[in-house]
Image (cartoon, rainbow, N blue to C red; front, side, top):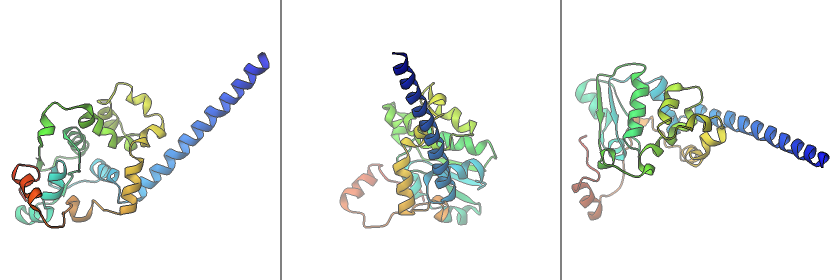
Length: 213
């Protein structure tokens, strides 16, 4: 009986050791992938956290990302501009990015394009859960960690695992790398190309895709 318990304990010890080693190795690999590529959405967050210094900043979901043309804003105002709009994100994400920026400097103008989902009560999948995009960058960054605690009071413990930090974003990171869709082109502005059909026109007229620039 004792020998079986000892054998089980030995196997459990090796399993935990292998898991910890794999977790550390996986984290180092994914950190390298993010930091060495300019094509991931996570690098936009890192840019906000460490490098952004533009005078005019745009925040919002896809409507902001695809409609506020940074070059036109710069020419009109004679001020530098960056568009931090992100498809599918909401006010929790915008608040996170703004806090990361304001921790370093104060831009002259900050524009927040609001959608109804930003101020109406919604399911968690449309609110704090969207902060999962910050998880890969939580290691060593207390500002991001504090924001992620909005998701759960146990988030700090969960984030000790690199597997957890990257679990929900792994597919998005790989997709960004393969598509090579650089968000830094045109200072964050992402133009849409194609013909606007009647259905899309009705959506725009009803407030689904308007913009000011």
